[in-house]
Length: 311
Image (cartoon, rainbow, N blue to C red; front, side, top):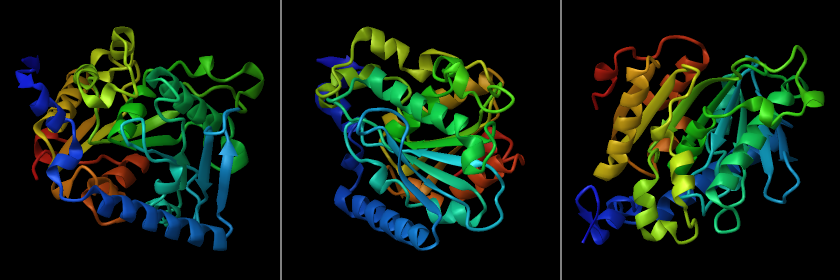
């Protein structure tokens, strides 16, 4: 029986199983863990880590903030982890922190409650609470409230994109507004890697078991169905060794934003898969990292989408 886009269930589940393209996911999870532990140890020694900052009242509503170790450019890079909204945490999410600290940027790794203990809508709103907290705490932590850049991998890319569909005044009490009031556009750029922007096929697969997505949730939380009002630059990337559906989702989201006048860049990163493409953020010489640094410096990344889509 056809489930979605001419896929039967087995094919659809394979398309939305990133590990179908690799031999052993545990090799990459170990890299996340080892690199993150190294960054954490280094930052602790340098007294450049503020760990387990609560941004809400729930136990999982915590974030880690890594402070610049060189000149402070007063800009914040926020990383939102993937794991299909049901795995991983901030503990495996600071693998690129040292690289950003050395470049003079603050780096935040966000934790959130995982499904089935939270619905997808609740997870989206937790991330909004985290970003709202980082906006209101900018002066305290040493970056500008309107110089915040978001990045996510897989489900984290979905969550990062969902932050563009946010009325920040709904998440920031009047008495917590930063000096000078709420910035018109606190989010200045997004890097979305191997993301899911149309949730429709997810509801047909095993991935939905802990999520239990409703039709209303799918419609409301699919970035591809809506258009953000603020035209900020967005970097899209995915690995060469990924399924056709993950690649299609990035292309369609990028195309929608490009047609609406957003500055977008899209690249299929050669010799990378769903799990290691994001590790390029730890390498300042990689294409992905150079794009992010260019975005944060308000320079023009590779302009033409067609050119930057070359592998």
